[in-house]
Image (cartoon, rainbow, N blue to C red; front, side):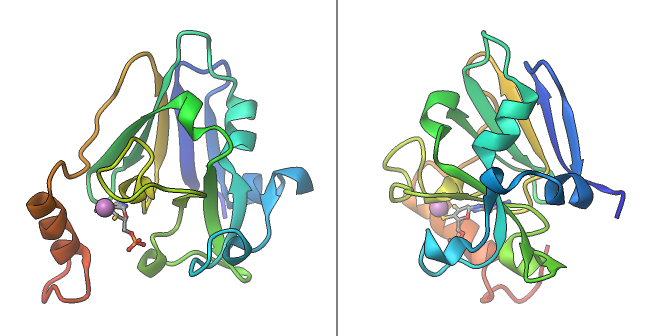
Length: 166
Ligand SMILES: Nc1nc2c(c(=O)[nH]1)N[C@H]1C(S)=C(S)[C@@H](COP(=O)(O)O)O[C@H]1N2
Ligand SMILES: [Mo]
């Protein structure tokens, strides 16, 4: 599978274009074999975001990571320092790629998220269909809902209650 699943770009020494094979080749220490053991109710396996960022090597002025889901134009920008130790990049379920029904092919999961809108690293930062991580200086694009009605509308649109998909 040669197609690129996730790119890491911006203020990094080594921009990365990661496909299935590159993700599979990451060492054991980078791997999370079963995300349900860490975050109850979540499924799949992946790698730590820290391991990917270590390989990309953010350059000194970089202090924000912007997580882009180009599929549905959803974006989250969080301080790099807060992400440390928190991000799991889930990309497989059993032997298969993570399905879009679970936010695949790449789903970011935060180990200890705050409730939506209570802080930087909240549930809303669990980005589905993650396609690019852009390192930058200062906050980047962030389209997370900022109030309850926006939040409800977003969930309505994404949820199974919606009669027509995007
Ligand atoms: N690409 C994308 N990721 C997204 C969203 C979205 O609309 N698009 N919604 C976010 C919000 S607001 C929340 S609360 C969580 C919900 O995901 P869950 O139902 O798996 O908990 O996904 C987040 N990730
Ligand atoms: Mo949310």
